[in-house]
Amino acid sequence: MSDEKEKELKVPAAGGQNGSTEDGQPDTPASSNEDQAAAAAAPAPRIDEAAPEAASTAGAAGEAPAVEAGPEKPAGDAPPEAGADPEREAKLKAAAEARAARAAAKAAAAGEAPAEAAGPEKPAGDAPPEAGADPEREAKLKAAAEARAARAAAKAAAAGDAPAGDAPAGDADAEREAKLKAAAEAREARAAAKAKAESDAAAAEPKEPSPRQPLLDEAVRLIRSTVAEDAVEEAAINEMNDHMPTIVVKGDRLLQVAKLFKDDKSLDCSYLRNVSGIDYESHLEVVYHLVSLQTKREYALKVRADRQSPSVPSVVPLWATANWNEREIFDLLGIVFTGHPDLRRIMMPDDWVGHPLRKDYEPLDPEV
Image (cartoon, rainbow, N blue to C red; front, side):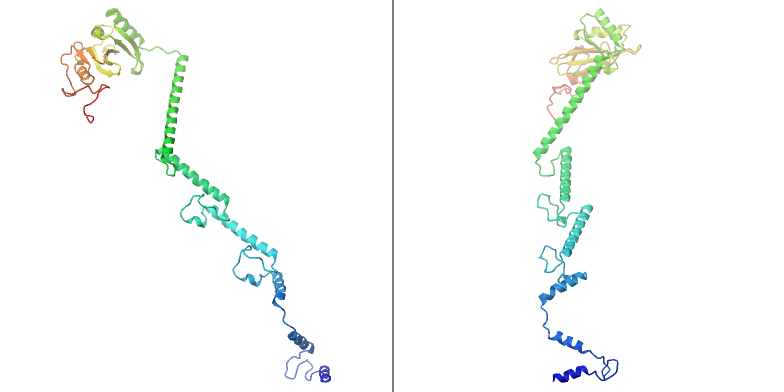
């Protein structure tokens, strides 16, 4: 049998010279048939032996292994497969980290909160920050929240309201009181500094005499020489009232001094412009404003009265215009003008109790 096979191998196949069989198909060399037969007879390679070779071949071609065809998993979720390329795994992990960093930076630039902050805002200290959260962003959000709370508390304190936060109302009241006290102390300090500056300026520069000082001196001289030496209690220039000469006379000398101002040619105060009453708590006072129609000079005469039983002589015999003025002072302050022709109330009812302009007045009906 072996001899016949050897003969067949040595004898060329019948047919054309181009190596084709009789049916026109290409002639297969005997060596090729032997290789195919040897491949068929050889045992199939084991899967675990072929896997490394396939993986290395795929890695050289730049393709991912078949096991990575599914959803991508983080590099740390499972140990790398046997035969995986460490360099490739490192690149994949670096790319994932870069994408996460870009996403976090974009969210921070847009001022958006993390996905978990989409609901009601929670204080930064209520829960620990998520893994991978940006510490710098968390710090900025916390600082912004604290600044808003501080502004709200300051606004509430300025408006006199309690803070909107959890701070107790007592703390807010104490803070407000402290601020009010500090403001009052600052005002007092400014006033004291201003007064001191004015005092220093006045001490540094001698005060110029009033332009009407000569008129006051002449009137005092006439009163003391004509009426009595002790008729004048005080004399001064009222700078706040256009440097008006003001003289305080004794009550029992009032009629004599008033007659002097009306009849004396150098004074010539024929016109009584006004009569007014004042309660100084320590005493009551009546002021007479006299005017000379010829010289346009003005003077003020003052008389002081006791609070317990105030009484002043009436000047109606000299100036009839004092009639209703003295009645009004009697009605509202209770000063009795002796010698008045018709001294009775002029504004309040006759049965009214008390005098409304006195500082110790207590009304029977508080609503009136």
